[in-house]
Image 1: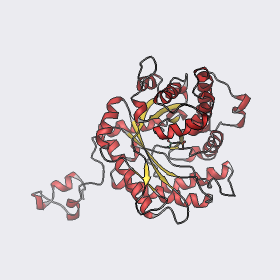
Image 2: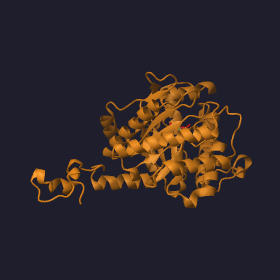
Image 3: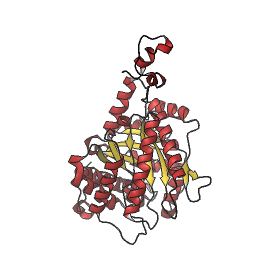
Image 4: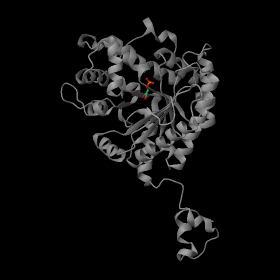
Length: 382
Ligand code: 13P
């Protein structure tokens, strides 16, 4: 019995010679029809993004989010400030030793260094792969009080073609799932999962690796167990939808939350407990075909995020089908931002802090991060 192209050709109804399974004629294939060459490119890029114990640096804050981070530090909330801050990041010497890819925002991918070099060129010259955030934000979901649906599918095919032309090789979409009284709802999980899968299919069609980010938020009093349950449900739904939309799993990166108790849960968890719960949850819900899992930090401190990623790799690394990597924004950038404060004179010290956090996370992927790497033990040798 044959499925796919041959079964269709041999269907007696359509003039073919022989077939044993009439149902096969109605089903062409459940697989993506991307040309094999393009699929291989996606797989190679996805693997490169998680190779060498490196990870992703998310610097794709939308303008409102970037301004929100600047405001409490008294940094002017202007396009030039945002540009200067991103120049600081992409010109950090030696960053490419720890970082495989950076995620840009629509404003940022069009910006240049002061000397006129485009950010995309500066990033590529540093041996880092440029990526781009392509969702247009999480909006209140109709009929679902307290829940959000991520938008951005309209016109996405054209935007992806433009970003690809500008040099982006991967793209991110973030869905947010809140945990609270009676939420998340099935409707919210399914709508977000379907949007993630449709975006991922469009990315692969455009030759960009999708970084699929379903984030179960840390806000709230919920327990570690409830976060586990919700994360498993969300991931199972997302992978069902990815399959339905014919997304090639080997050519994507999953960017999930770690399994954590809510920020105001009275019972917080040790790094080992977080590591056990997170890896067990992922093993139940994430197919082995996925090459890499790169966690978001979600508001954890840089040190906690490194310690938890380290614990996962110490305890499980040699036994897992996928790489456990990082794709942090705040957990890499925040100390650097607090040093920079918008002042040219602080750029070098801020770059040192950024380099240091990136290196700590590289070490955490190797299971070699420890507290002695922080504070006075920190050395900057780009
Ligand atoms: P955080 O690491 O600050 O959670 O950001 C990751 C990210 O890219 C959110 O979309």
